[in-house]
Length: 101
Image (cartoon, rainbow, N blue to C red; front, side, top):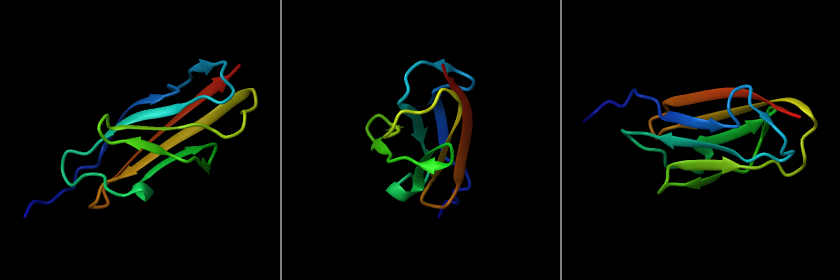
């Protein structure tokens, strides 16, 4: 038996930290990967925008997750958070703030 105590990786979160975007419904995306036990369940992948969960789509062949807000966002600063857990419960979290002009 192998012990998996390594959390998944989250890379390339977009919009990037402090990025200024003009799109009022920006696509949020990131690459996720787990080299040990794997990411199996949809409920183990979360994208939150300003604290509210978005509906996440996952492309396992590309290790890509993405979501889009259903309604246009207000001009100003927003926060996006990605949380990913592998099958053993190891968790990775990344938080970025971005600005809509």
